[in-house]
Image (cartoon, rainbow, N blue to C red; front, side, top):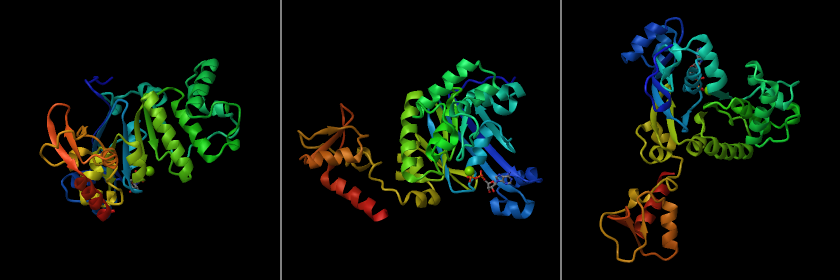
Length: 347
Ligand SMILES: Nc1ncnc2c1ncn2[C@@H]1O[C@H](COP(=O)(O)OP(=O)(O)O)[C@@H](O)[C@H]1O
Ligand SMILES: [Mg+2]
């Protein structure tokens, strides 16, 4: 058993590299020295750089979205978390414990109890009832029958499929089958959920329903979630924070607000340029220094723009931004109009 280190994070990924190919070790050295990028590694070493020096952490109860185009390395990262694949270099820690240090029994425990996984296409057993599909993991662990049934029903209830226990997969729509997949991942009540494009194959409206329901459920059960998507809007909606990947690297990690308002690379900039900033701007971004007129309504620095806008439509002439005690600045209707104008120009 490896030593348990002090931790606050549920998942820590530290300088993770995954290079596919027989000459991965040589390619790793060259890539670390900056001698080869993804294209060059393929040419010189016939190796594919899947993940390049990726670091991130997920706090307990947090949803971290990894967003990137197809082939950017998202699935490769997530497969390391429960050690479905092994890193070329770097570390994955679960609650401070290196997954590469786990013995076979501990690894089985990790996969069966600690972590639940949901994929884009959850394959269900056609001849098993919905409840038996959901309880499959528990059956493998030889959980007593009665307990299996209760856990399956409770998980089905959570995903909005209470009452469907005795039906069969072919009686369910695609969206419902994904719900069953989620229920299966949740049946053992894992602390961590790994979700690899769970809603990507669904029609837009059904997808929106599942996103909304998952967010609601997530607030209730507070599971640490690594959520993968290639869709920026989905990432903005689902993530407490977002990590944006390009060619195996993580370009930027931050809250949805910071990604949209303060992109750090050209790539992220281009990516977020189609998203309106208006929902993400808060008072601190548009206030000007100075004290507002006496009697001006007061708001905190983190008040979102739509709320500030409403104050003007309700008749305010100016807003005072304060931290409750000190004046931080003021906002005029012109400040708001300028923010709208800037946004309209970029979208
Ligand atoms: N088993 C493998 N062998 C070789 N290359 C792989 C393998 N798995 C993934 N890759 C490559 O690694 C890169 C990242 O793939 P992947 O993690 O599946 O991307 P994503 O999930 O973001 O679409 C891609 O270039 C892909 O072709
Ligand atoms: Mg993938």
